[in-house]
Image (cartoon, rainbow, N blue to C red):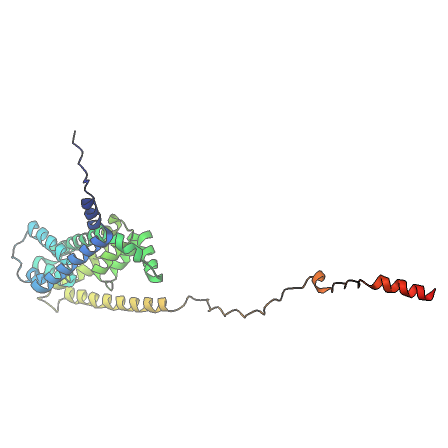
Length: 281
């Protein structure tokens, strides 16, 4: 049998472990990881390496290697359209689409795991306000349907959708499955455009380019309408008029308090009455 792991008995060690595992510390670590990844992307520009400096090798191994690099670059905020175009130019339409979709799911899973482990506990209490609570409720209750709609419309940034889903209570399987299905149309358009970049007048290139333009315009229109719909008050509701101030109610006086009390008879009244009686006699 395995021996039990001894727990630290030093109070200082216990406090340090609690501080390092606290929600704020994990959120700070997440911010540091994302900042480092973004800085490395700006300095080294890995998208250029994937598009121009990639070794000209074929086969399943090259596709798998590109998908792995694609996932890491996507988690580090490298723009996906550039990677999709490079996948089509390097491997063609079919293999390029496979590598791009696999890399997309891998990158989304990495970002979702980072956000769920390092950021959820610290960011959940900050989900306040009508918009944030509505979005959180939609993602938590209807995870697959909501994420599928987000992936189909390219107006929502890929990284923002990943971390918003991680902060919500959405499960891994609905998130990854919706990502794998919802990103196929837009990814395929970029991959085909990259594969047919040498023939810009070909029907495949024109169709893919038209799909990219129309999907972008459609996402912009939907985002614009949703924003104005959220700004308008709900239909059929009018602002309540302020209530009129009621006059102050005076307390009613009781009958006993309002009736005057009888004055006591003077002490010399009997003497005056007897004196008058004797005079009459």
